[in-house]
Length: 234
Image 1 (cartoon, rainbow, N blue to C red):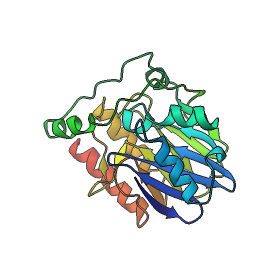
Image 2: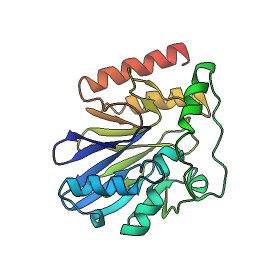
Image 3: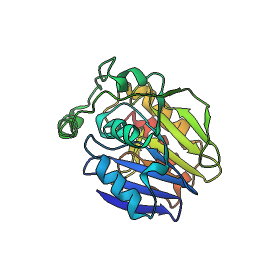
Image 4: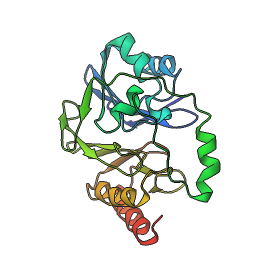
């Protein structure tokens, strides 16, 4: 796992072979946005310690959606350090193991990518302590606004920190090679609409579930990519 500084003293990306998570710091309090794959807890704890911080400072784990490369280590981290686990109410039953993971509607070119993604260990059933809804404000990052962002999954969310101009998009938007609509969507048309809603937030930093964060000309790039996705339907 690689640890990448995005905003000094505030935000780091934890990059796994497939997917990534983000660590936000408010003084002594830590928030994890997504949690990597099952078995990744030790690497996440090591990354926290390498920053001169302690895993017990982890207050909450916010899951952007129910897929295995984002949920996998959340349960182990929460059990060991007492962090609260939060997810949208529509994906929470999947994360808990009460409902199956929804199958995406794949385009032909997505099929080999999807098969590769399934090599990530399956996430164990994971507790969700708090179910989120659109517009809720969480106590980190100067007030973190939950943005319901359906399309990738029914309960996907974005996490917007208006005070810092930061947006975590989950897999609604991808930044692999270029900024584009995320892949493996359960409802592509809805995902395109969501892309436009997230771009309209006009962040200065966009943190994707896959691909490097966007920190330069972010608003313009997001708007152009959302327009292109809407025009092409892809």
